[in-house]
Structure formats: structure tokens, C-alpha cells
Length: 314
Length: 314
Image (tube, rainbow over all chains, first blue to last red; front, side, top):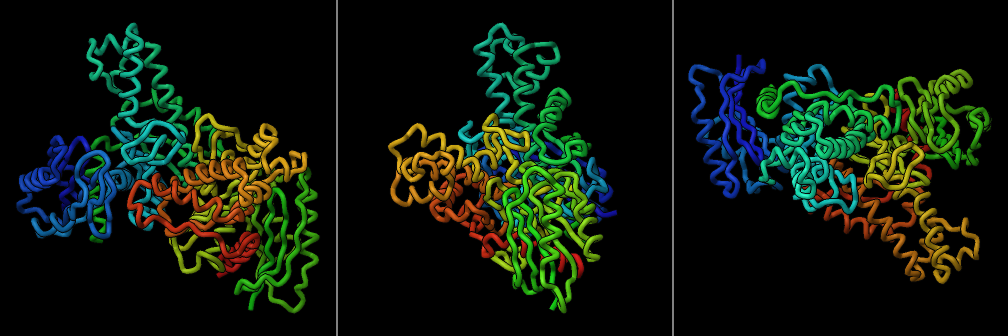
């Protein structure tokens, strides 16, 4: 069976793996993404790929997903809003160095493709993947294929405005889904509120270190009955529901698959979001699309990068 | 050359025509849509079609667009937010009465298909059509085909929320594009503001009859330099720009085609919208999609209904 070298380069983590065509992730490495120097990112990536044990294995090619705007045809990372990795011809760099066909795409596109190929979206031809991480990424599968739009710029669902004049985003927009319902948005809101509510469990769990407050801590406090934490998650669920409703009203997919760190808050976030969603869908609310959690967890992107290689070489 | 009988049934007007396969609209009738009784709508439609002169002409089938949620496969009008025409099996009614193949779709889908086949979208395979009328309808063409989604419910772009908690819409949503940037929204806002600014040209042009104030009157006042009218159009352009930016960030089409009464306000609305749009697009702003006016005017829907017939029977 063939193999693909796969990589997922996000604003926080850089992952590299060796994936068998049936989706088995045989080797995996994970690093913190260097923040300020694109050369360091490239060096780390090439070095990590070099460490994979590929002897005696038929490696078909290399796939890489990057958290930003990627020109798929050119294989160029054009722009990353969350870390310094713009204007990098990554396809050429990888192909030249390893003498293998290489393909580069947006990370959330590949997470959707990964779930479609190996995970929660198998045998489903119209789906949307949402990666709820620090930011919010999207991937759209139409007729079984990734839909990239005219300039490879489609599926930037996190940068869809749901509240004109709302908080500003790294992309220069304001009030977009990422700025309101992304992981960083929850962290910032929780920190602000905790300072004003020192009697809250959130504040206590943080032991006075405000920057310790993250979505995980808020979820923990909410489970223990903290009112502030529950209010924060409810507000977050409302915003997420507006984003989901917009996706349904525009794309009407068969399912929406949620991945990323924030998806791990699980039903605490999703259950109220589903309730609100029903009220905001235009048509046929009783048959509205299923909202499910991804089956691949943090490996969705890397498995999608491998799926891209196999698909492109078919 | 073949012909199609085509109809466009909106909340305000009901149009019927006979269209040649090359897009020539040979006969056309226009009526006010009966508001409260679906039987009257059906009777008017059947009667109008009966009046068409089809003797000696090869009529391939009947196409109809309706302003609401249409189950395309079933040919059923499921739900109309703006007039009483829900749960009507229009495909069956038309096919039985005229013994011809019949097809029913959402009106804004068909306006987009009309522009793609005969108008501003010829030879363009990825486009979005926006019908800016009383409400706001959308149609999405992907790979040269109408994209209807999983339940025929896609492209409800007017019901995309851009301002959570904003004014409510006929669809039960709030702060959606239709409620903020639709024609009715402009009328209502202008009437409210005119009452508070009796020195405005808008108020004067209305000769004291507030309900006379519409988008057309606002445009007229703006051209003559009225400050209030210009402010209203600027605000409307901002909201429209947010909607356009969301379309670009999600679908990245090659062009967006504007139709409908409000599009006739023309560059007074579009020019400022384009400026704001640039700032809200995530990626590759210098190559952002073209925003153009439709080439078919109020006939886009009826020509699209004909195009649907020819496409489906091919």
C-alpha cells in the first residue's frame, strides 16, 4: 500500500506524519510552530520530514496544510493572519528537497477532506468542516470534492461577519465568526469577565493568574456549576449557532463536522447551539443538517493532507 | 427552435412569458400577485399561461420560479415568507393541466441561472446572483450548475445574519441581510428618519405621505444632494458590503451579479459598497471578485425559468 508524507502547520502546532493510504497514521511528530521567522518554520518542517522512517515504503508524495490563505494551484502560502509565514512557495520547496510530488492547501480545507476521506464524513458528498481552534477555519466539500472557489479563497467561514461593528479580527474584518466565537475570543472574554467577578469559580481555578484562563478552564468551571462560566459558554454557543445557521442557509450541507480544541468543550457548547440554530434556519427546520463532532480529533488536518496526495495522484 | 413557457412568481409581481431557446422573450404578461389566497395565484398563473400564443410552436416544457423555499426534486413550493403560497405542488399542477414537463425552483436561483445562460454570467462557471428586491434572494452557480444543497435549501443568502440581535425578518431570523439591506428595510428606515427630519428633501418629495417613501424616492433625493438620503444610502451600502464580503469569503465566486429593484439605485449604492467590501475580504483583495449589474433586468427570473426547462430536458 502507498504512503504519503503529511504535515499540518498551524499558528500553534506543526505536525508531521507518515500516513498509509487506508488512513493509518504510522508515525507522528509534533512541535510548537516558530512564531516570527518563516525560515525557522521551513527548517523545522524539512528536518521533521527527514526524520520519518520511509525506507522500503512506497511514498507517493507530500501534502501540507497551512493555517492561512494558500494559492492551491501555485502551492504558495500567500498570507497567514496568525503567524509569520506568508509568501512561501512551499510546494516547490518540498518537491525540490524530497524529489516527490507535493501539494499545499489551507489547513481547514484539509481537515474537512480528512474527515470526508477517513472520518465522520465518509460516503457524504456535501459537507462543511469547521475547525474551532484559536481561530475558526472552514472547509467545503461539494459533490465529493473540496470546493476552493475562483482564487483558492473559498471556505473562509471564520471571516464571515455576524455582528457588524463587533470586535476586530486579525484579518482586518470586524465582528466576524472567528472574532466572536473562536477560542481566542472565549479566552479574552473569560479573562475580562473573571477580573470583574473575583468570586467566580473561573477566577479561583486560575489561582489569580488571569492568563491561565482558557476555554478548557471555563468548561471545567461550567461543569462544576459556575454561573459565570455557564453564561460565557451560552453566549459562545449563541454566536456559534449564528455561524452554523448562516452555513446552513447558504450551503445547505448534509452534515457539518466540528473539529479543533473548542469542539472538545463538546455538548456543553453544541447542545445550546443546536437549539438556537433551529430558530435561525430559513427552510425545512425539521430536516436541518446534522451537526457532529469529527472522528479524527487533532489528526484531521494531517490525514487530510495525506488524502490530498492520494486524490491528486489518482 | 424550441420554446419554453416561463413564469416568475414573486411576492409583488407574477410574470408569464414565452421564451425561445436562444433567450428571445417573445411574449410577456405581468400581473400583481394575489396576496392572501394560493388558489387565486394558481388560477391567475394557469389563465395567463393559457393566453400565450403557442400555436405552431414547439413548446418543450414549463418552468416556474417562486419567491420562497421550493423542493426542486418534488417541484413543491414548501414555504413562502412574503406571501401566502405555501405547500403547493406546482410541478404537478402545471404538468397535468398543460401536458408538458414542468420544473419549479426558487426565483433567485432562476435569476442566477438566467444571467448565467443569457446575461452577465455567460461563460462563467462560478458565480453568485443576488436579487435585491423587497427581500434579498440568492442563487449559486458552481461548475456551471445551480447549486441547491442537500434539501434544495441552499443560497438563502438574504437570510444570513450579519448583525446578531438586529431587526427581525419574515423568516424568524434577526439581523439578517434581508432585514438590514433589503428594499423593504430601506423603505422602513427612510420613513422613520423622514418623520424625524421634516426639513429633509425626502420628506418634501413625499408631500407629507410617509408611505410614498421608497428606495426610488430616496435615490432621487440623494442625487439632488439631500443629506439624509445620502446617509441612508451609505448605511445601506455598508450593510450590503458586509453581505457581499461574506459571500466572497465563503464562496469566492468569479463574479457576483446584482439584480432586482434596489440594484437600480445603481452606482450610488454599489460604489461605496465596493470600497467597504475591499476592507472585509480575507484574502487577495486585489483580485477580488467583480461585482456587476445583471444584464436581464426584471426578466432575469423568467429567462432563468426557461433556461431551467432547456437544461433539464437536454
